[in-house]
Length: 150
Length: 150
DNA sequence: ATATATGCAAAGGATTTGCACGGTT
DNA sequence: AACCGTGCAAATCCTTTGCATATAT
Image (tube, rainbow over all chains, first blue to last red; front, side, top):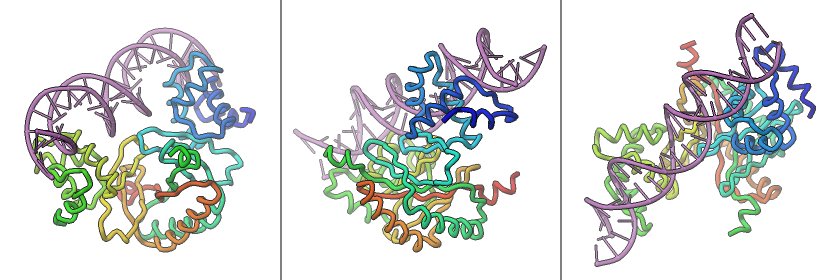
């Protein structure tokens, strides 16, 4: 939670430890939700008046490049972001509601999934000569609340 | 290939069988590539001068809702589309190059994947009370050509 | 002191919408 | 005839860029 951890990783990276960056990291580490740039911006306005949406975008880009964040493209052209926590041995996949856009992480059964993924990555590398760097596994559906709303 | 198949599925759907729709379906069934709306529009201009980009978007939306197409969101805010062929027992997943945006379908090893997916869907439904409708499995990496370009 | 970050306003790119006209049923 | 589809232009939405100022190192 305290920002010392992040701060350290900024040292020597060429990038500077600034107030907006700290604010964004703190916010994301508190919410544990997936937020869009605009949502982050609006939430931040309360605790950090005067912050610019531009800064939010630039910070998110930076944090993604530094490996602190994952960017999740929704079909709508909007992106959501999630923090990669240090304890993120708990790799997870996504469950996305097509009605309200809510994203749920799940970690159940990922062991089985991960095993298969490793296998798949290896053979994709051989067959298609791709240098695999990452993967994205998502399930789409309608969440409980949206089901009730019908 | 011939459009009779599509045409049939339009009957009684409330939607009409028109020239632009036929052109788009024909194009997509020929290319077998994943194309963006703009790419489709530009390719179509040659054989169908006067077609509007708006129509392409609206047709793609319609075709997606009718279940003919899959929409694949790239991280960039751009979407690509792929036809779902009748013989699409050959369900496939994606291999996406992060350098050039190229998308490769693969069908190898999907049997194993599908088995796991079924299992996963079932338990996600139970645990999170999601009504699962679809999934998306993608691997990211650098394709052979882009590796050489470095 | 010097390079990097910030905020604003403007630009950009993809997609959507309003509206009058044209084509299918 | 009635309704749906089309094309154009304008509008939206999310994101990026240019530039002068402020800030971190």
